Amino acid sequence: MKKSYIVIRFLVVLMMIAAFVACASTPKQSSTGEYIDDSVITSKIKTQLASDDFLKSFQIRVESRKGIVQLSGFVDSQNAVDKAGQIARGVEGVKSVKNDLIVK
Image 1: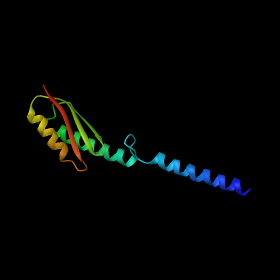
Image 2: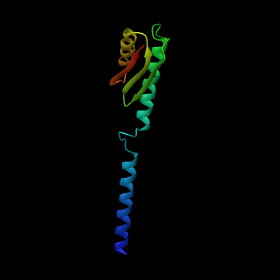
Image 3: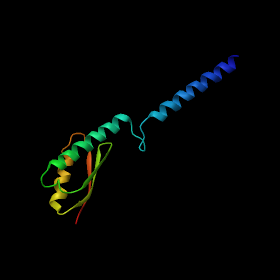
Image 4: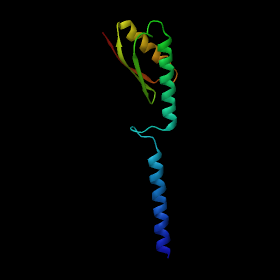
């Protein structure tokens, strides 16, 4: 009886550890809080790009993951690339900006 109790306890502890590890944030999986933070960052950047008279005519794609922002799309000048990067860097919560905008 004691052996079965010890085995059951061990299995319960093992299952709890597995459940804890499965819920932890990994490079391929983000927590709900991280997802919401990235959504807020993306929304703020898109709003600022759309309200900027110089950049609003361009289709600039914005993606965020763990505070790292990626800008992609086509613009007509290097000034537009620089300004979009500057706007993205100015948003709170942005750790870095990968500016992949292409000048046509």
